[in-house]
Length: 637
Image (spheres, rainbow, N blue to C red):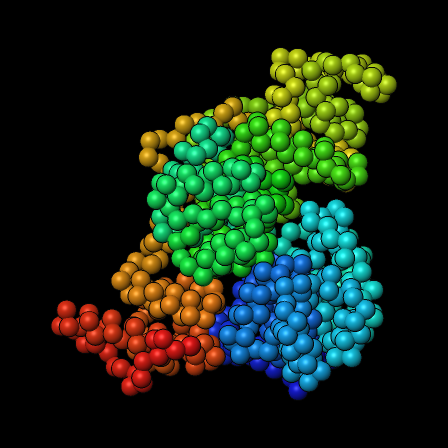
């Protein structure tokens, strides 16, 4: 059984749990992690589809620690490699990376560590992995597991295709690695099939976790005054870290300046900025609290900052996958976080123009059109946003009660008749046609294609002349969002009816459609729900103590030139402020504190807690609690 030398299958669960606590400081696995880790330790090949923030990296990091030999992690994200290597080294794990950002001296050190057999994890960029010298080096080092992160990059149906990924199956054979796993957060059915075909010799054991991120509050608004809307959203998040995405470099800089003048600590980030400036801004965002990054999509890939409390889109994202991936950068620590997306007709025109002018194949453009249309359907959805978003990934869910639509604020009408007209057109044309053909049928526009197929003779031809083409496009998007019809993005964007749609067509069910987004009551901000939820969690502890703990974390992070969360994430500090442990043994009970972190930072943070307990006792006359009896290490680490 590869990878489990010295560990019986009966011992695996307990061994994995004890390592989880002693190294990572976690008391329990997140949903799905233990099953995947057991499969890897049992020698199986694995495809894991897990949402952002669900702990994918632990699924190869923990087995790498438990098993002998080297685990190679393929990732296209240099920033993610750097941050994960930092975190692993802080936990006492031998880890390194090979990519274009590595200095020659560091590269030589990594190669020597490989020859000495001391590395447990090596992160490699796909471009570096395809080099003959890298392949030879890894073949000699002996790779026990090849973990392929961002595996959707192998698929031409995916949203982020990378041609280097096509060689990974071949390279696995060349380095003589017998076991592999592929991980991704965003992969629909066609993309998953592509991953299996291109990366595995035989079908792997597949784990598909729910795409739901229940800690994220979802909200969307039609654009009115984008600056004012963004500023109103930020008002509930003063002092918190967050990201605002813009569609252009110019808007990124203008919005960052505008919000900076309004008192927010904002930094711009886009690909047109000098690399040193971009790197400096990213380091500030990663290392300090309360920084708002105003950025294009050039920022974010591989950013693993767990305490991002909000993500806002000042402009509409490119498609559903991009939206899901970008909002997924909020709330990775599991605490509540907010998302808000603005959309308008100008956004839609821009995104469609980008698709049409892109240097891609017609098939690729067709798929991108369908993906973008699905995002517009999410914006115009008449029902729970979470339901609509999860339905795109093939997941059925109940209304969440935690998005802007579930909380009210929209106007709807009985759209059953309009839905029946649209679905009748779909059914009478054999469920073989896309949006524009159906819209032409409904509005009575006898195009050459309509006449060639004889669809101008259908009973539904012209049945919707009372609405214009945009009205029918919106209705089709809405009934798609409502689950009445299904979109096949591979087969030319054709629409088909679902069972629910057939019931509506037969008059057995009704459907509501949106007329417009109603004005919200004055002062009512749905995004405040998440902000207040975090605040209430913090209030269970002590705000003054939490501020002191954050100040210590900040000083250590700056001294070590590390992201603050590499020291401890917010969740750990909040729990410290709530529990206020008095001994090192009690520190080990705190989430995120394992043996390595205890040894390196325990005394420093315990000193802060004990001084605070003493001050409270003096002020209030109560017991101060026992001291650790150890010298202060506040500036050590």
